[in-house]
Image (cartoon, rainbow, N blue to C red; front, side):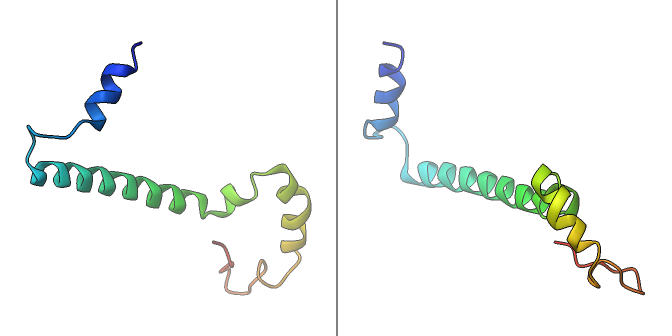
Length: 80
């Protein structure tokens, strides 16, 4: 009962709004969603996030610490 009014609002033809306003709104929403996605990808591309899973920390991360990628003489590590 409460969903019918918003549903018809979003699916009716837009006689009251210019096409430029609709395209501009869609572009703005797309930019916000794209920025949010890029921020999450950057956040999830860290070593701390990667090994936060209990399976990774107890197995793969322990093996990684024994490789030359983890222990470099210059101190630079291969992390995402």
